[in-house]
Length: 141
Image: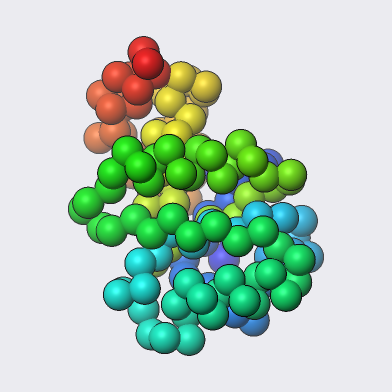
């Protein structure tokens, strides 16, 4: 498992297994966001299985499936709400961590400078520069 801390309170990762949740909790994360649609993954990684494993450890689990190439504002709003509602650091995962980075950046438009929203994920290879126009529009509210 590869935890990529975008900020001290938000990290992303490529797909994890139920057994990885122990390490997520040990790293201090209290909320887990699953940005992976069930249709992309084998049954043992489906939302219900991951939720069961996370909640057994006392982690808050949020399902916010982001379909590749079909991101919606509902996804952005849900990610922002899950982050805002968390009592501590948030860990989000998808296939590579890219979608989890994108919804974080868009959910934080207007709360952080666009340079941070693009630059912080770039440290891990997530290229979000193409989102600058969207970030700027969302920042204006």
